Structures are given as C-alpha cells and as structure tokens.
Length: 163
Image (cartoon, rainbow, N blue to C red; front, side, top):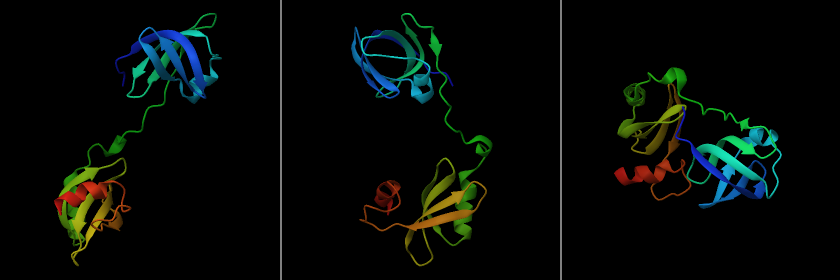
C-alpha cells in the first residue's frame, strides 16, 4: 500500500546504523533507510541528500535517496504481515467457542494478528482473558486479577473498567 510521500533535502548531521538525521530548511528530521537500504549507500556527516519517503510519527521512512555523486537509490521496505487467509473469520465464531467452553462473555472479541482475545468469566466466577485461534481452538486462558498490574499485557487495564 503506497502512502503519501514527503520530500526532504538537507545535510546529514548524524548517523545511527540505518537511521540518520538531516538538517533541512524546515529543521532537523530523523530518516530511516532500513538495514538493507543502508547497505546500498555510503553516507557521511556533511553529505547533501534529497529524500522521498513516508512520514511516520517519529521519522521519515525513506523510499528513495539521492546523494551528489552517487546513483539514485530506491529502497523497498518489507510489507507488514496481513491477516491473509483469515480475513473472513467472524468474531462471533470465537465468542461461540468461549460460550461452548462454559465462559460468560464480557465485552467484544478483539482481533489480534493471530488470535481473538475475549474477556470472559469462567464457571467458577473468575475473570479470564481467552485467546482463541482463527481455526476455533481455545489456545490459552490467562487469569485477570483486578488491581494486578503485571497481568496479561495492557489489555487487562482496559478490560477492568467493564467489570
């Protein structure tokens, strides 16, 4: 998926592995070539560059770089994994797996890259975070203890507001 690209020109002021800062007319910016992109160009402090890339909250993800005296370089960044074949998976099916196992569902099923996460109450009345794979298998349950800060990731804090 192609995003809006931004162009930035300026001098390299610092190098950090595959990232570097560029001082341009609008100020300093952090640029990210990625590890493979950094292998394709030799940069040094003071080099003048023209960058084109995708603006991110903390940096410019460089898609192309032009340096005086060097060939123009286009950088391909790996695409993030998608849900792929699981686009059709229905959260209601995951909720049904939980209820079939005896859990009372509290809130909605939340889709993660691999499982659904569901807050449920087991038959004994205890709160659990359920991880249900897209194939309908209850992969894992984790107890949710109100007030405990080191429980199942940050989702615990969000879910405690509904119980």
